[in-house]
Length: 318
Image (spheres, helix red, strand yellow):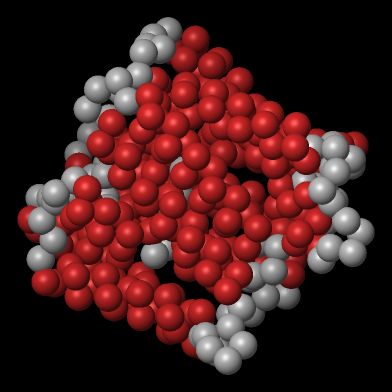
């Protein structure tokens, strides 16, 4: 198979993954008033962990239970947990496309972390692209400093935490293979869900006077399980398939090619956003998105020219 064929296959896999993520995000926004945030986390991780176990058994792969970086592994999972807590919370009050557009500031943070923690070289051109990308973030946020809603920064916070998590993943991948990293990811994530359940899973911190977003965080788990179970099952299956597609795409195709098509998630998010929630991005949002995408593409192209892959070796969504 030629490189063009491989890249085409990788692009198709990425688009499938982004479509599944867009469906997941839209359904979380659709049911958040009847489900609990960490109930969704638990179900998503539990289903995905079972599917991963079945996949590994089917492929007859081995999983080393020894991690060479126990502390960093814990920090990586906690950062990932915080990242998507912030992102899913933002979906309750922010248009889908806007939240995903802000999340795509992730490559800028990845490049910054790679500079300071992985000692990668970043030239003036990429620094300029990073600054330009953050200008795009500023345009999308459209801040009114006299009355700025700081919760609008949650998708950017998600990008920051996720980039930190991916930087640790890259650092630890020299000794811990992907199966080991996934094993500890799901193990620690499920333990975190268990701890959260003990503290607020019975709705003991919830209050009927809370706004819908706050109730989403503190609502009693499984209070509407007859309604939510099918959605949670889908989240777990979709996340597993999407990750498999992304992982396969980055193996069979050039990372610097397929990573560009992760931006299709913004377009995919606009479709359910319009039809389900009547969300129509403003011209300012489109301008900011264009700046973010342009900056991200430039960073990818510069890395390819220099054969120094920082932001392109790991997927933006996982």
